[in-house]
Image 1 (spheres, rainbow, N blue to C red):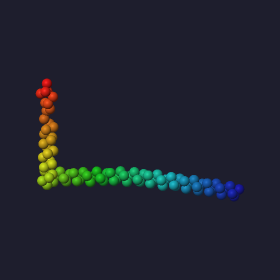
Image 2: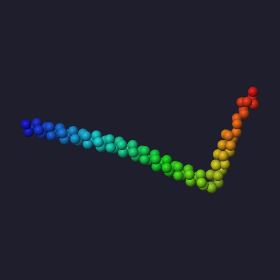
Image 3: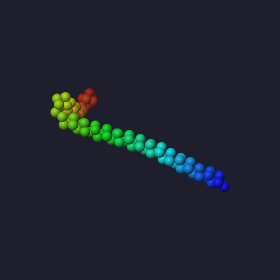
Image 4: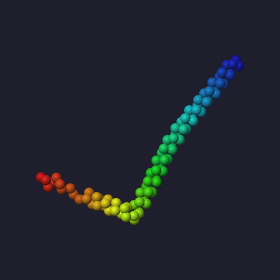
Length: 87
């Protein structure tokens, strides 16, 4: 009877060990996912801050790039008449 009780107790301890090991694996997995999501969030916030500062900059290269963007936007707003003139 003592052997039987010892085996049952050992099986219960092994079962608890398996549950703890599974919990640790899931916790590591979720921590890894949280780390990736947190890193992407911080990268996005840093990028947004850098782009905002660059847009407010008065550096000659930035001003030239802004003027180029404005020129392209102006061209894009004009109506397209290439195919109508060819007919």
